[in-house]
Image (tube, rainbow, N blue to C red; front, side, top):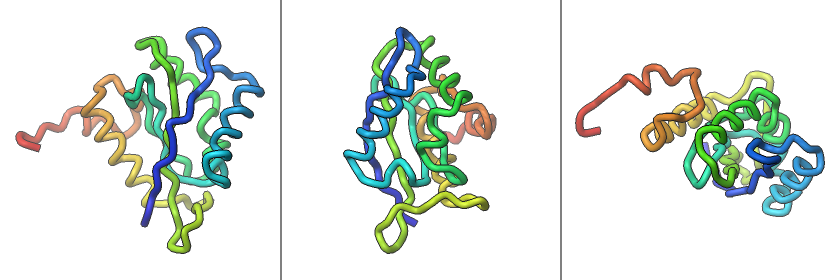
Amino acid sequence: MKFDVYGKFSVARNGHLVSRSKQHKREFWEAVEDCESGLSDACGCYVFLIRGRAWYVGMAEKQTFKQECFALHKITQYNEALARVNGKPSMVFLPKVTPGGRFASPTQRGHSDVRMLENLLIGSALRRNPDLQNVKGTRLLREMNVPGF
């Protein structure tokens, strides 16, 4: 199981909110593809950042990054984060890479290693930002305390 890291890719804003314009989305995905061809159609994890700090961690395992990252309910999460802190939003992608060096594709069954990476990233992000927008699966992470760890 191998994952690479790509980004930070700037996310366009419309005032204090994430832009939902088709042109801004097209420009965003063009920048992603200019960086690495095929990345927008890969699966893996992604992190929404404001001023370099994680505010939402997501995964794309049954859909591509392009289909998943700017779904309406994700934009709502991003906008709630932008309401808490002002700054330039960006996105980082951690695509799953096959043993042959290609990007893994989404599947209907999903990818257990992508789910595990998402949990690890959420745990790490929560340590740096207790206001992380993720709610699902974070209760134990938020309440757990292990001295010295």
